[in-house]
Length: 108
Image 1 (cartoon, helix red, strand yellow):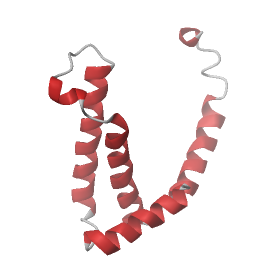
Image 2 (image 1 turned 90 degrees about the horizontal axis):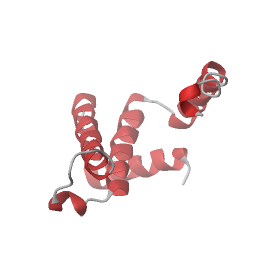
Image 3 (image 1 turned 120 degrees about the horizontal axis):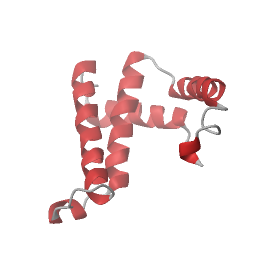
Image 4 (image 1 turned 180 degrees about the vertical axis):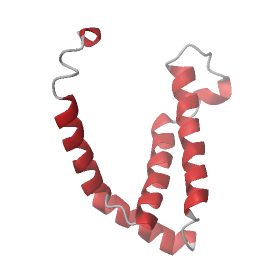
């Protein structure tokens, strides 16, 4: 699925199942909540915190997809073309960082 197709699929889902988009502030709060769930899994599974039994069953991919879903909702309702935005971001990062990471002794 392309990013464009994902934006359309989310929009179609909202229209068919979600009645309407939540407002932007609600979606921003939901995005923060979903990112927190990803952070919790990462901190416990890959970080130094111990993982609770209830957290061991959580699917990291599913939680990441929840983040993506809400991010796409925000993009759709604010008129952001994520394909274009991501391409511009990659170009900016390439121009800014093309030598920086190669010259970073911490990454060698």
